[in-house]
Length: 138
Image (cartoon, rainbow, N blue to C red; front, side, top):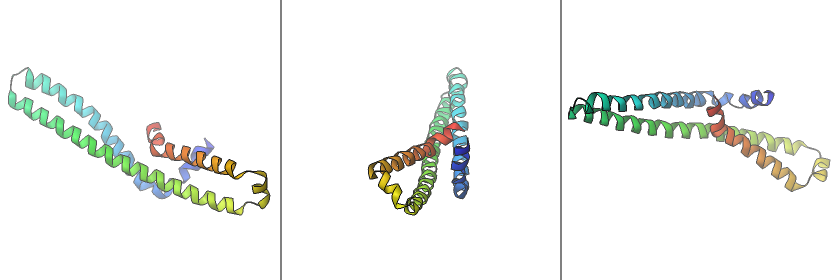
């Protein structure tokens, strides 16, 4: 839990963008509820009554709702990944600064491959989590 709070501290400069991403995710959830409702109305009000105008109206609304959902999903994906990339950039810069401050003995004891592997895999795991994992967890 301590690690999560520390990771969330990197989110602070990007909290507005993250809030936008969260709002877009909530809009997607709302739209996920709207689409089945529209489909139900198409069947119950349009097809059962035999009114072609209502069927076309609800079918058009379904198409619009799906188009809206796609646009919101794409925008949310772009915003969320941009936030994740910015945080990872900050982490890499901080990590680079820390590696520069380590004593020469550290580099004598650890091979370059071990250092690169650890840095790369840890940062990639954080990047993956920040890309989607965190939002899914909420």
